[in-house]
Image (cartoon, rainbow, N blue to C red; front, side, top):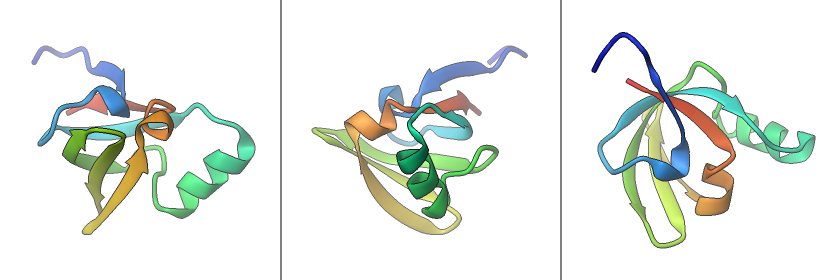
Length: 79
C-alpha cells in the first residue's frame, strides 16, 4: 500500500483486515457507548467476520460484534 492511508467505514472492511479507528460519526449517546466498549480513536482493530447484519471485530484481546448500521458510523484507516 502507498503512503496515503485508506479511510473507509468499518462495515466495508473484509475479514482479516487490520485498521485503526479514526472517528465515530454518531450522536453523543452512541458515541459514548462505543467508547465505553473500547472503540476509541487510535485503537487498532481486526475484522474477524463481516457478513449478514453483524461485523465481528477483535480489539485489545476482546472479540465483539456490532450491527452493520453502527459499523458504518465508525471511520477507520486501513493498516
